Length: 123
Image (cartoon, rainbow, N blue to C red; front, side):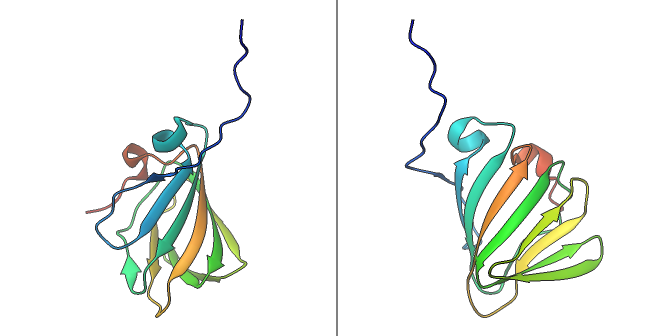
């Protein structure tokens, strides 16, 4: 009987369809590897990008690689630059944006995995 592999190599991340110019490549997660415990995604947000407020049911870690990113978290404004990271706990009301003139490249880790059903974006 063959044993199950103890690793998953992903050479083609799932590219999440967007309409706002943001690149989202999920390397590990529900859409890419059927992993529900956590997700790992690489993202590039164009200048002047923003999305609606949300209140996710998951913790989210953001690690900025290039550029800057703004977070509105329960009324506080936090800005990260390359080399900085931030943990936002589940249940916080958050809005992500890049109101700056340069792209922002970053990685996002969600625990449990990101899901459209648990992000709770406001209209």
